[in-house]
Length: 219
Image 1 (spheres, rainbow, N blue to C red):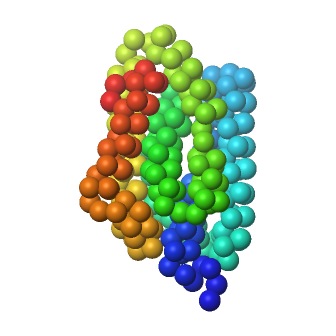
Image 2: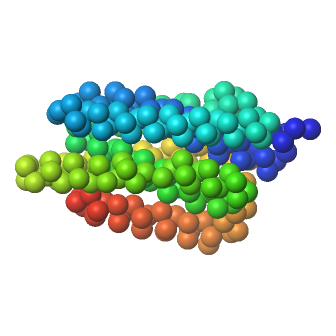
């Protein structure tokens, strides 16, 4: 029996699979969104962030290999959910692209960082490192602040956009957990009970509120 056949390893590979496809999809999205940048400097900055996502993708797929899994098979169950999220939250402006990179990706990162606390230390460290978004956070906060300062009505529109992103992210995360038994068991088992799950959700919600405030938007 390979590591991928064991229940715990199956859950870990599910976690790595959804993250790997998320990083690959983020690379595609950021590369496309860079075209909306108002100048070459900002286009290059967004493109550089896309390159970072690809680096994370390679590390995650390498870890899947180490656990005896196949990256393509590990990612396949999550393609529809991830692509549905992006299809429903396709930014139409540079400001929306920035908020999506910061708020939408940040919410997903918070969720999977919480789940990573339930896996082995090596995988946990890889997941947390792959989800680290300090560069994109600083970049998005700075650029959104500039946009808002030049348009008094933009903050309210981007705040609505941020709430839409959250709704879609929660919906697709629930879908993933419901469809993947091993991943659901990992979350429930790690949280301990319903109170533990409620506390996990509260922590994610609190960090989302802080993130919206940081970027200058209302929750």
